[in-house]
Amino acid sequence: MNSIIKKIKIIFFTIALTTCWNFYSQTNEIEKNLDTLFQKALQSKTFNGNVLIAEKGKIIYEKAFGQADASNSVPLNTDYRFHIGSIAKEFNAVGIMILKEQGKLKLDDPISKFLPELPSWANKIKIINLLQYTSGLPQIKWNEVNQDSDNMAFLQKTSELDFEPGTKYDYNNNNVFLQRRIIEKITNMSFNSFVIKKILKPNGIKNAVVDPDEKEKLFAKSYNSKGKQDILKYNISGWTALTLKDFYKWSEAINSFKIINQESTRELFVPFSKDNQTGLGGGTIENGKVTNHIHDGAAFNYQALLISNLNSTIILMTNNKQNNLEEISGSIQNILDK
Image 1 (cartoon, rainbow, N blue to C red):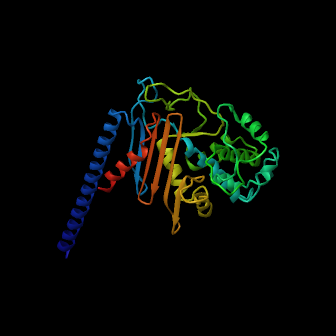
Image 2 (spheres, rainbow, N blue to C red):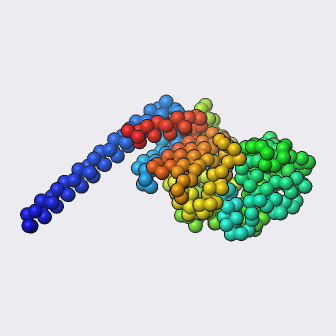
Image 3 (tube, rainbow, N blue to C red):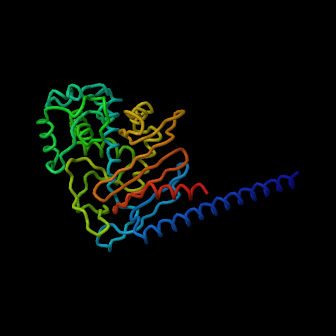
């Protein structure tokens, strides 16, 4: 009897050892292929930045490629923060839903309820219109606006909307701007402080910075293909910069309904019409799980891409925009699928 048990143990040990070896070999092959992909991209100057890939909730690849600024003398590492462009709009959208869950606002509330200093057209714009980019607000005059107060003054002087709220989609940063002002009115906090204290830190995101300046340590500086570094300027405030791991924590918190519940998350995924963006970019929920979450963003020569589904998460961040992150993510997916 003991000899039979011993043989069974040996068989199970052999199977386990073989499984572990196969998994290690497969993982090693994936890493090798990913390294080849990014080294070629770095050499051809088609990617300079940081990348994180996870499968089934486990990070399998996290590396930095290239330089932290235009000097070509400071190498990137995975502790660097990057601007993520429009993806940073997720923080105000989620902030709005946090306040909704707390009973401090309703999505059908007119924005005049919280911003009475705006003209009478604010009575027609609902908070849901801001989240779905259907408010009819005019575009920000970037050449004239240098700070939040400039933009608010411009809106206060605006006599009419571009179209009737809720009738048309127009991707427009004034929707974002007013979401942030509503959060400030309700919480009596600056939006930047609200993001840090009420969203990021409670969810273990410790290294993020909002509106970092040129002196911020471990903050990648963006530059163009000619090697000219961008002058960092915030026409409107509230832009969060993240490390790879913190970006991944944010993605996982959204996917697990850790910050806002399933209903609120679903509401942020619902677009005005097909292929329009929402507060979370784009996504789907099926059978109580986030099955897909995609969001891209760009600012200056920064560009970022998040692609997350039930099987994997891909995060790409660059400080030398080449408008090719979707192509790179496709190559990554091909490697993972082999």
